[in-house]
Length: 187
Image (cartoon, rainbow, N blue to C red; front, side, top):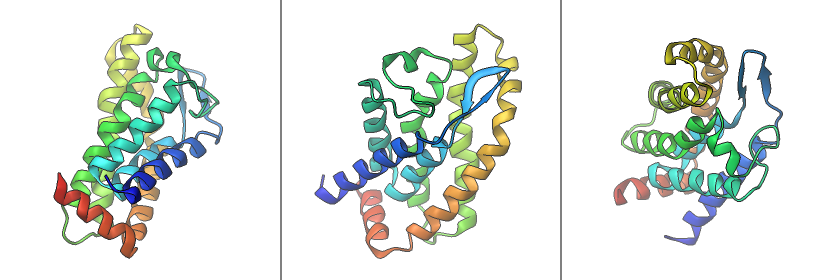
């Protein structure tokens, strides 16, 4: 791995930490808060590609596991990986990988393609892993967890749209664009 790749991985992991300083929106009917860190996951995958995007999210989660309070609301430490939002956290690297891999496969990057991937793969994967784990930890039926999670959909649509726009703009940069396509070839 090149120094530039390591720098990008560290930069996106640090950006996730910065997003954690934005206070969460707590809901009265669920212990899982609404945070903006989903935006960082989609950006990591979209900008860095699958392999480096997953690495950046893994580095971020390792720093959180070590005790750094980088999750929204100042949460951190091993306890967050057994809490109601653990499934969403575990989905971060997989989501970044899948989003990055699919975006890197398009020869012509259009905003619509990126948005489609972020909505169908990115948000869906987070929910696919996060909701069942939330239901298991809270001892509620999965269908109740699905209904509860509908409160996150409007915000996630906004975050996916913003991430798509930012990825589209950032990938027009010659330095980042070359880096992503090199990563796609090594997969």
